Length: 477
Image (cartoon, rainbow, N blue to C red):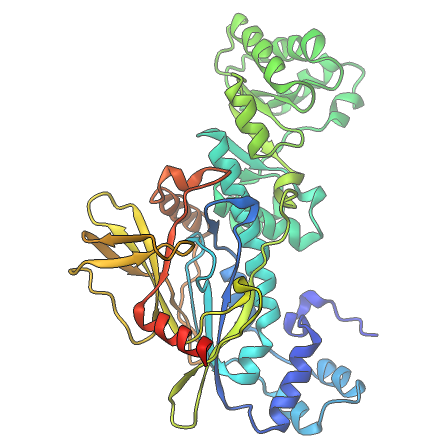
């Protein structure tokens, strides 16, 4: 057993078959063969119209720091199944390949690459686990956060889920992904320290219980934090004691801007009553915050019922994505290069049509209406194709191939951008707030019909004629 913490170096955070295949490739003289892998997903969580890509920064940091230490080498030697030549190769192992990916915060759709790797076979294979781990987790949480934020309809949403997350990294990176997806803040303090996610928080029920009385608890808190305090009013009785005592504390300390938080009970009913009480006391600027096992469906429902809520705190159902907790991204071989540099497409065929892969080294274009700026379709092309946006382009619906859409007034943007070239990172490290801003801007380019929580309008993701022909020829062959 080792005393080393896995957080010291994530190089060994791999599925063991990455190592057995690597040893096999090395023994077969295939370690230098160039391979192309795509990371993509098959279904949008919760039956939504799109997902949000997130987790790329952590993938980039991992690849920059890939190193096998002597303790790792000794561990692998102890397994008794790896050659000494392979272990010597691992001692100087570094990533030397190329990576392209969609920027974090980009709305993405099933079947299109979120990330493409071109690298020597062992290197390309070895990084599979960590790529999937990060992109699957953070894309899942960012997608759920964006749904919840859209349900809140302009009201601030804070992520409250650290204590219900699956482990420390689930809490920290979940807070990061939630912020990218549109949350305004997080209860996770270290998420601000590490990633600039605004940390917020006031009191628990234990604060109120710790004092001899609720008025004393509120009075003490307002005296310590007179600037925009939030008082938790449901420890005993919201309407009979909590809100009246909060009003008294606000008035005693001359607080006009603050909040009360409801963490239980019928949120719609209570918020209406609380709003009337606050307004009647001349505290129109005091906000009402709601929490307690919320998600996008509950938030939308209480708002439709006229709830007087100004902001939401969402915990376990966001951080764990309780309603659909698996993103389902996969990492599949798309092509290899022969000794002369020719790219040879590869395809995985399955009796399940959804598991048939799209072969080749690809580009992905997003096509926007030139006048409205709205996204119209995505097009997957062979790597040597470019889109001429001065000529009409016919797009087929991915579900109904007889259904066509002709674009005549559009601009094309490549979605996959360089992240690594020749093993060197070329993509800048971005502030999380900048990624969040980009995400919300890009979601605004999607039609409202695609943003429905159930039965959203389908988005066109098509293959170019050249790529379609390559795929069908391989299927027939």
